[in-house]
Length: 432
Length: 151
Image 1: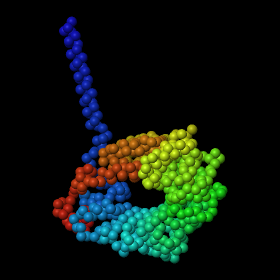
Image 2 (image 1 turned 30 degrees about the vertical axis):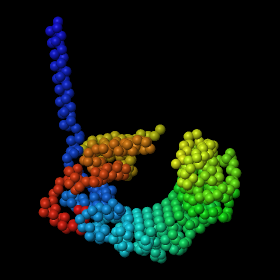
Image 3 (image 1 turned 135 degrees about the vertical axis):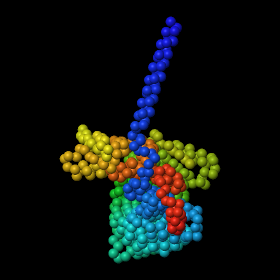
Image 4 (image 1 turned 135 degrees about the horizontal axis):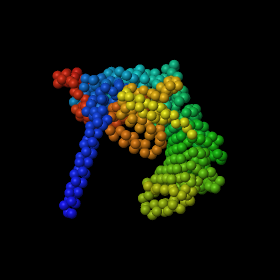
């Protein structure tokens, strides 16, 4: 009996082993035939890809890496000369410093590189400061070169003391879609200049030239403009808000550290800008100025129909008039989701009574107050927002540093805020 | 109920794939062929692409057409390109010919990332590029390009 059981067991064992062997063999054979073989991981496929694909890839590399591909193989020679996007930034200049011939100036290298390029150049970024050897004349010649190469995105960060006077060649770059300039100024355009027909985005930082009508003419001749950012405007002329209000396609408007011609009259500013039908993001800097005329006794006649994000810097809410104006502004934006305010309130005055119950609900999702001093009017504004925002998820308050020194002051401040009524059940108030 | 018209795509090696028209239209090349092809445009030849690559391309189009706003689209894309450099090159080439911008950008970006931070020798190794310069030729090249400090 024992013997037959032993015999059966060994036969079973033999069968199981052979089946497993057959399965393994089949698996091995299948691997031999898998389509993976056809991809042949050992092949050089990249060298024979279409030129446009190779250029697409090289455009995404830091310039120095793209140029280096010249010596990969005979096929790879000159593939880099079809580059269409050039970025000469800190990374590039650092690499330049690390190479053998430190004597050859950056301006020479850039000029020589440009001479090799064969195709159109759609993007050019140059970030220079006075530690590099790049001269204004060099940049002018490069802009001339680019104007014949269909340049679309031109970004120049010219961190020198004296602003760079842009050459008139710039006005021949009619394919421009994005123009970003830092510490530059414009020359008057030629008389046959009719604007940049394709310009979508204009970002000017530290613009210092005396603005004449020419500048405003040029801005309004860019009808497709979607984004306008003016920062640190050092000109003595003030920004004409009415001219900006003519740009019907504006989606993003940021005027930071700029003197507006309607500065003292919030209402006019908001009425003009409220007429922009597509405006989604607005940033205004009131420079701590006080409201001297106009008042918001009524709803603004033009609402901001598409405004989603609003950032108001250095708004002075001391006078009740200003507070009601601020509240009226927030009320006028039916789709506002994000609000950031830095107030500049100095002293308290009797707050304007605000009837929270007749106010329509706001769509706000996120609110941030910076340099919060906790004046009566500041608190009033916060109260209004909390009470009327049932969808509010996030509320961040960054107090003005000096208030927070005494810890009991901080506690008083925090508890006062926590007691305010909130319409939204989930709002997270973060005091940092 | 939307009509689920299907299109048959035929690769260079004769493999056929039946796909929803909406998925096929993700390729602007196919869209153009259909629009200009007339009535008899249910089978479209894609002679620049092999069967294996075409099936991957279809997988990409399917995901992007059927669930364009899903949260896992990003992770799908990331996993989609976790493949060998050869597969990536085939995908880039196919998406170029079939005019599928999303896939072209995705594969180009992934290939570009494989270049970054590598020496010339390392790049040759990764992509199996044969250095067909003789040592003399290479020396001459470096001399001629001595102005070009990156070479």
